[in-house]
Structure formats: structure tokens, C-alpha cells
Length: 104
Image 1: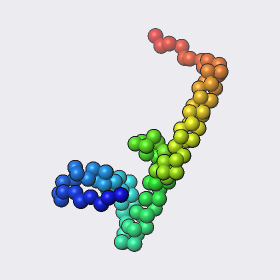
Image 2: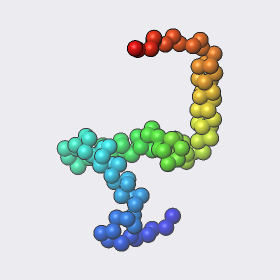
Image 3: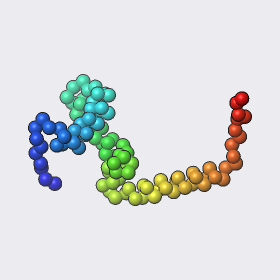
Image 4: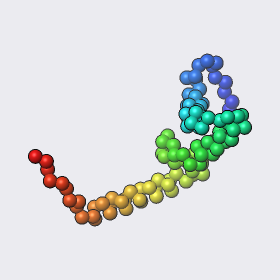
């Protein structure tokens, strides 16, 4: 990994970090309102753990970064496909539902 300096006062050159700060502020800091520096550090640490191990990310196929980093995304996608196929089979096997009479 290489350290790269971006242009000052030009957020477009650092889009990924700007997006991270927006998410951090919108989902952690402003929601929970820390009352001290220690409280803020604790909240951010908890949020980072949640962000990396629980929260699903659309950009990486709705898996967590921890799962992606560990190479588990293909297993997860296969399990999802299997569950969807089972649900579709159940829907097709179920008797048709009664519908209400049309309104005049």
C-alpha cells in the first residue's frame, strides 16, 4: 500500500475517504452523540467493528468486508442462491391463493 497525498480543499480527489466520513458521521456520530472524547472513541471503535463484520456492503455483493477478505463471498452467494431456489420451489408447489372478488 502506498501513501498518497491529495490536494488540499479538493474532496473529489479523495472520494473513498470522504464517503467513509459521511457514513461514519451519519450512522454513528450524529445518531449517538458522544458526550466526551473517550465516548466518541468507544462509539467509533464499535461502529468500525460493526461496519467490517456485520454491515452488508452493496459494492462487494452484499457481504461484509471481513467475509470478502476471508474469501467467503462465493460460499455466501451459493447459500443465498440455494435458499432462493428452495423458496421458489415452495411457492410453485403451494396451492393458488384465493383472490377477492373484483370490485364493481
